[in-house]
Image (tube, rainbow, N blue to C red):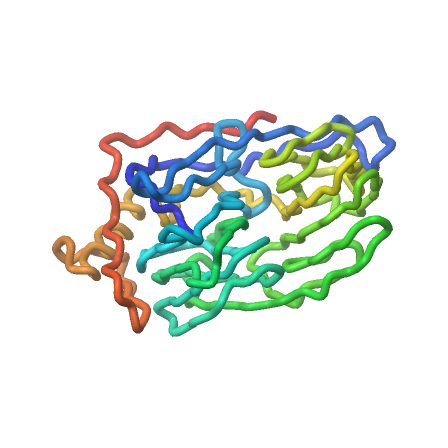
Length: 341
């Protein structure tokens, strides 16, 4: 699933991580910062509505993670389900993680894959890629998370690629853990990343108190899918994202009287500002204009564009639907905004 908003805004997202006071769970650290979602309709009146917690005014990035959409459970058995024709990406990686359902992925680098629950599908856009996503006919309920990670300056024009990985769930006291990126609780993912980062699914039994070791150089986020959980003493409800700044070497997670499922993301602060618009991540307004023009030229919607001297976009093979044209760019550029300290 990608950003198919009809009128996306151009956003300048600074990397401005908060810093916790001291190290360790018992060192007088404050609680988590709770980021509430906003509802974003994708496309027309019958399209899916997602709960977006990143980016937003109070926080732009968590490590390199720059985009978090949480959707479902949606009944798609009687409708079109997810149907996203070919569309472009630059300067980022898309991370697809499903709880329920199944999606077919195809991209212009020649990768065709199924997205299934408990399996990581990571697409590296790099200098430019296009892909499509369709839920399968057998899918009656669709429920999952779509995340983006910004590529650092040194790697953002890398060659496009795709990685599929199914982590083996690990059993912890009162919990189950699936690490799909980085390392958590001595569980390691072999998936290569361009910046130090972590991604995992955690399921806590009702009443569980679980202390997790953290990398103190990382900032972290905990997206609650179901149940209510205390993150470092601060309660987070379903669809909320609990943020922790750098400087913590552990966190206590405490489930209430029902089971909790949450997604843990984190990483070393990117320390770069990025510009996001539609499905592009760049470093300036001028780059975004060039990316858009090149996509429009590739699909025959507008005259030839300029992609900074790099090759143009191509399309996945075997596509039946026409590619998505890019929306019209905003008439003004937004002013930069900084995260609170």
